[in-house]
Image (cartoon, rainbow, N blue to C red; front, top):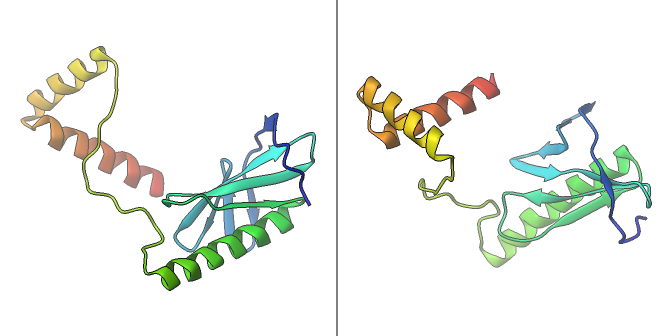
Length: 136
């Protein structure tokens, strides 16, 4: 079992496991994503479930035990949410604030004007294209 001393952290790149993808320090299971970190002094992996309104952590001293711990954390969290009547995943309202440099803001606004789009429509299109390009 891991100790609670989790610093300093090392990152590691993509590995593939049966039934679960693990890329760029992220695990995916069902509709959930978990972060993955490694503590060199403790020789263990650990992470937390992302995209939820609670803090749920998992750990393991091997990739296999990390995977099992993540599966168990997700499954337990789903059950707990059902018991208390809450949605497990964060809800999104469709609006958010983004901080970018003034130069990029100006360039994007000018490009939106050139395309005959509102700034919101331009940003929506850019995010849509980035998400769907990444997914394919």
